[in-house]
Image 1 (cartoon, one colour):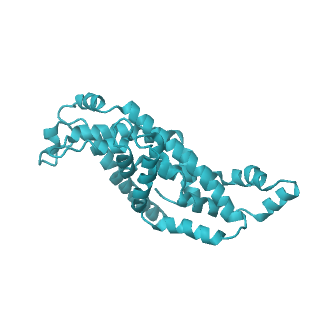
Image 2 (tube, rainbow, N blue to C red; image 1 turned 90 degrees about the vertical axis):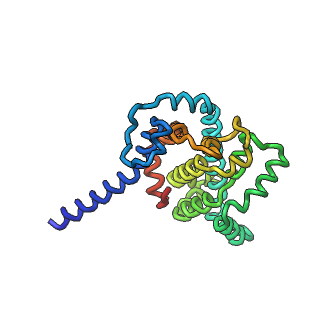
Image 3 (cartoon, one colour; image 1 turned 180 degrees about the vertical axis):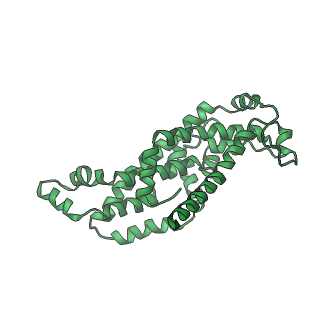
Length: 274
């Protein structure tokens, strides 16, 4: 009886938390089809629009080039994932399995980078991109994600959990360090790589400050930056803003539906949270 009551309480709490998390998305969806007057009136009980305003969709599509924004955003995410996984896997293996002079000091520098706010790096990063004449380009969007301190730490921990017997067996079979890494150790850390890919994709998708600084041109910016630029100085068109946000959510929803299993396995394996 006590077990049944405790399970019922747990399920009730989970249902309430789920409802609380879903409410903002439902509110965004309903607001996207309202008029501006409906979104700004004081009456809190006007939730469903009286007349569904589909022209908000056409207005947003005309004002924003979503095809180009999708291409910029997804291209940046894909390249950041590729660079993060590649560099973090190599550096993580080196810090976890190889012995070289100054290893602990260098890894301490990596940890120090994780402790410093990312905003501190914006000015030197922008100066480097500007000197390379790569502003308003995909490389400019990619630049801060070429390497990742968090990914290095995550993959180092994954490699450290593997038994040393694997390396010794590979060495006896004639494998050198690159072959041991490529054929023996790296395939065993796929879950950590998936987790890093998930974190990188989410962080890159919602990154706002860097795209607004390095890509002020609307043709080269991302979805998050384009949404921020929709905020007017003297007035807010909330229905169109919510419609644009609704359209911008589509890529991540589709990616999650396709890679749902990998998302869950990666988060569960890494022990992290988004």
